[in-house]
Length: 207
Image (cartoon, rainbow, N blue to C red; front, side, top):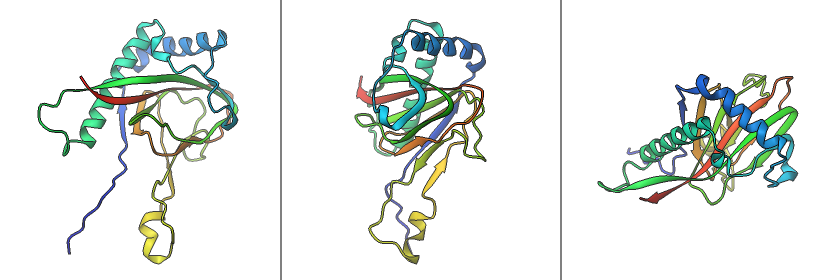
């Protein structure tokens, strides 16, 4: 018998060696944007007690922002190249465009309900400071949902729905790269510390 698996959903994670060097400056940028009352005003109905900056975070003039953006772009390119290694022809000159970028500051009771990121191929979540987030208690974790939705379920479809979702074990300095079309959420966060996240959406274009 020959098995022919199709339509994989691929996720990648990276650790930033420069995290400790730039973390405090990146947090300060988040607070600077919040203090200036610069907000995205996107999908407010599915967010609570969560500050979200406009989607041009990488335009902020800061060494830390520039360094993080360059590193994140490189990571997303590596992820996209790994996913497409069997399909990109030799010599293809491609580049990553981070066309949207933003930060989150989540406070006690904050959450971001289920959503996806249209108009992009790859997205990322960077754990700048997880605060009191805990994976085992599902406190403030990012949850991703199985994109396979069979019209009928019985014992023969267990392999598709045995795992309806998974939670990312986010750690400070970790970048999680995922296909933009996968539904995900940030579960309710409980804690006295602030939870900081950086995110970006990308397009892969011909250089």
